[in-house]
Figure 1 (cartoon, rainbow, N blue to C red):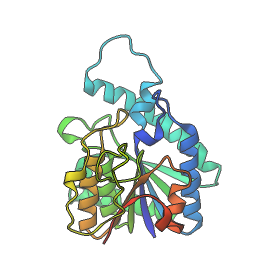
Figure 2: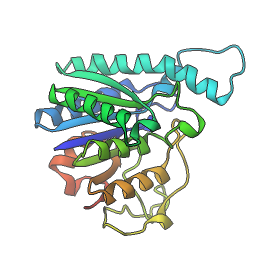
Figure 3: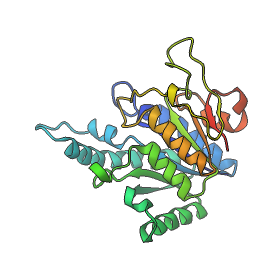
Length: 253
């Protein structure tokens, strides 16, 4: 099975804004387990901007675009270095894909990117994908990495897209409300817009709105989508081996 796993900034960063290395390591352990079960894995990872912001104290004001470019350029080096070291502990190879929205338009760039990722998978290299924030600004940006992961899943004809967040899935109300219930499955064509919270995380650009929008679009293309809690221990393994007893929201195909 070919699985795209998207890990958001709210999963990868602690409350103080620093990368959560322990959680990164745990997620990589689970991806290594997926590989041992003969699944192909593509990792879409946020965290570069958050990572870079903690590496450098800027002495003068920067506008939003300048901050994004500077901190992503700085943070991407640290982020991919951490992935390299952590995957190396499992004797696994990773390769970096920095992409832009225009690469998903039909044409030569689309074909080249897909061919690159195919040859990586064929040679047992795990693609680690992120937006190229140094050049993707304003209208050229993805909405967030939820959108990017959905496009990657469609480009690579994945069997499953797993969106890891810091909550278990989509609820019938505020997840903090004891009266709210987790929605375990979503049939094709079912509208859940009345339940979607518009709040975004402090670490990333996305939120449940973008996850829901991505999930609906990818589901319509025939790919199963799961929204689950990346902070849960062994969440990826449990979604494969013990899904019925693992909290999540699944968009069925």
